[in-house]
Image 1: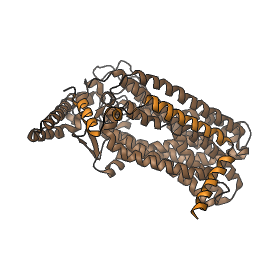
Image 2: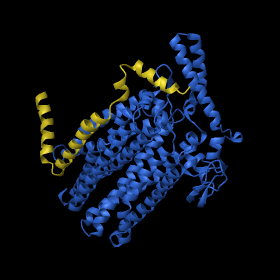
Image 3: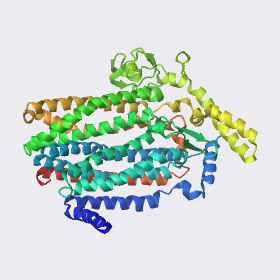
Image 4: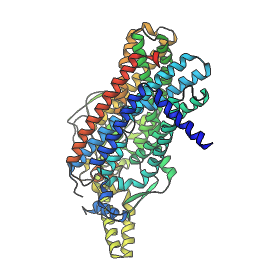
Length: 72
Length: 509
């Protein structure tokens, strides 16, 4: 029963993709865009600064508190 | 804190660029999903195959816009972690809940019901397909709700408390966050403006067909649905705009003053219908505010406070203070802010020493001044004034186009009803060329909302200069131009694919 259910969902999506005309070009754009965003841009240019530089939340809190009170 | 000011400027420029480009795609999706749902409902009710064809055509254009626009917003989340790490840490707990709900909702709605909507014709029952289409419309709009709840919190922070041990805002009451008056006002005004844009889009494309004398019946039917929808929503948008102005009057009076170029506060304050600002004017000189202006008497008092007699503070009063109207000066707020910062430092140092009595004293002092914390980082009172010309002209551009759309919808609907729209080529041309105005109005609205609240990243709590990361500006510059190229390429792709599909027309839908 589960097999039939999941295979019918699989067929639904597969047929949908196969029958697309304009959609194929759109999916290509989506795929290229997601690759550029998540692999190239995120990986190369957008590290999570606090995650990378500090081991745990305690260290991150201390850093931000120091930043907030540095001028005093 | 010693953050390179150019990092702040480049980070702001990058965020503005990504947000403005993202907002080219989003409002059309928000509105077109509803228009498509209405058209499909007519098809299911009447069984008329024409309506199915009409629905499928607009659904195709929706698919193009959705595919090109999807995930463009995720870039802003990248920027939070890299360029705005201080801000991200400080707001983390507050943003976590709404953005997580948005992420889950968007994923499930988009992967499930979008698929049924696009692939499900003739594979599921008419009723199931219609339900999916409505769920896409409702889901994508609810998805916007959570983003706007987060944005509204930055404009009017409620439902939280700042924890001096972790340097984070912690949610105290989720419902205060959700029912923040700024949140539902912003949500309704933003999504309804998206519906207006979608109505304009349908009317504009349909007008093109009528001007070309092709697909006449299709275009006429589409116009009637879009103009009716657009007119109702535009009138609703007036009321939500009024609510937005009222929220500004109550919580962000500086933004309201900048929107109207109001330097000197007054009772029975007029609203500027049209005006040219005097570039020499500042809050601390006696130059006149405008080179030329046409006012609506008492309009701003009515808009901001729903009373003709209400006093509306100007930029001068908000900076220098006004005892008569109980307005605290910027200098006083800055002094209290510095006390809050000093108390936070004293608390941190007492904690390091394990001195509980000193911790308690510092905490009490901090709590007494906590709502002024952000003012402790402001260098001079003038820094509290946003860019008045940008805010003023953006606001008036948005309002002018908003009224124009109402006139356009009424005219198009009237001539459609008496079956003379095809003969009114001037009106069809006006409708065709009004579409860019819709996009300009959309962007202008966000410019008012965001430029008008400067210098704050979180109102009264965190100025943008404190919110940025302590990083070099060169990678931010590089990614600014990278995004500019990427988004421009996406926009060109959208326009090319969309115009090609429009040229093919509904025959192959």
